[in-house]
Length: 125
View 1 (cartoon, helix red, strand yellow):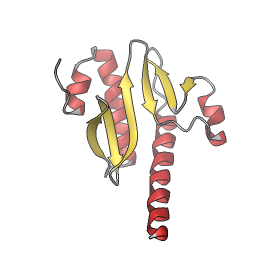
View 2: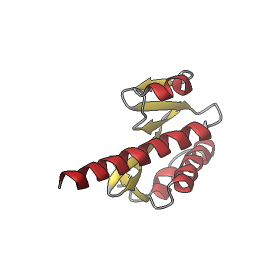
View 3: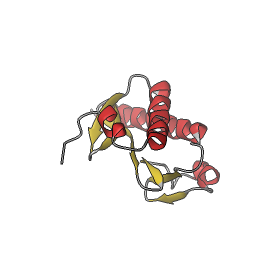
């Protein structure tokens, strides 16, 4: 078993159709938060912002998981209605086009969360 060291290495291990979807997610995250750092964490692609996890994504047999997804946030309830969700997880079926606007909204939401936590920490010092 080889240890994954880059997102490129991770993506290369999947069929071409899945690779395209993973690259679309990657490109969208980089577009929304260009300063985010690419890494591998928990053996899956991860983007970090301010040294904190922004989003993770991973391919499976029938879907791509996006984490953490704000599934408990009422503002996302309607947007998530057509997808399988779990605690902090959004499952994007491989056989459907990616909801790039929804992915954008999730990434922007996570960016705001990280900025707010960082601001709160500065206030408490």
